[in-house]
Length: 399
Image 1 (tube, rainbow, N blue to C red):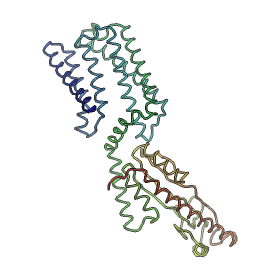
Image 2 (image 1 turned 135 degrees about the vertical axis):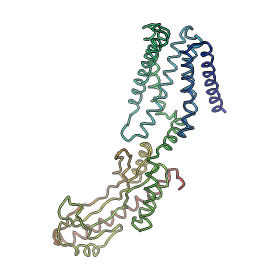
Image 3 (image 1 turned 180 degrees about the vertical axis):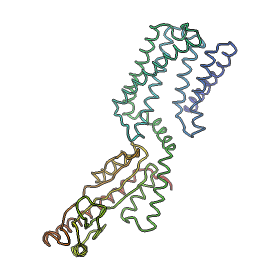
Image 4 (image 1 turned 90 degrees about the horizontal axis):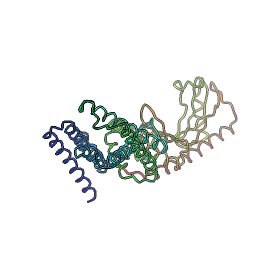
């Protein structure tokens, strides 16, 4: 009921603005007629945006927008500026509303941009500076309107003193909202508005949605061909069932014996043996017999999953789950404008064994490597199971 009441009030104020525009045309007050119709178009912009790009603005933002516009237009049309302190109160309230809009905008940018991150102090500072800047633009607009519509006669901008007090009111509103807004975000007081805007912003991220569709289709095709590591399938399926993410490359972890011409020439490397489960000494010997020319390396590689996230907030949430599951080397990366979570564990061995078919080191040493590597695989498997369980905290998106 409360929501409907505020929406109704918004529609009533919009209707009043339109009616005032017609009234001022009848009075031949062209400046205020223009102001009324321009204000009316601005106030119904949330409705236009919703109809054309299917982005719903929160009802409180709709109300505050039309209220801020109405304060100034009513003041001019109904000569309310002649009332004591009306001008300063109108400037203060309108600037506080502008500061609130800046708060919401900078929060959404911080959530979705891989390149911009602001802590609460920087958010507050930005809001203050933005509000003061908007106040300065308003004063410039008043000056220009006097030059165009009044032939230079000071009507909107009465005096330098009036201008300075307006800017002071704007600055105070920006400072108060900057501090209060940053504290409010930390306490979660704007959770409903921020959640709705975040959800609406996700719908507009067509590039992410299309990339997600293609990645999941490609993954399913690879699964049908048997090209995906079976142990990682339950986890990538679970991640891809969440609308905020999609996976690209993944591996459940492996043991490998590799032959390369020299360090750094990865593209010319040849796998002598590759296992996603534990191995025995005989498996390693069988692989080593395939060696002919080049350096021989014994490797243990950790599980790794690359997950694209729709927003920085979603990335941080997944990173937290990965860390809690034991994947301590996980991180967030910005790649070509995309936000990517690299889920990575700590298990790793890179050990040279020999060269040109010759194995350096004792039989006991190779036994030790194989034993440690197999224990690492068991440890990785436990972490993968834990990650699969912990992913249940996310809301599943129907496929």
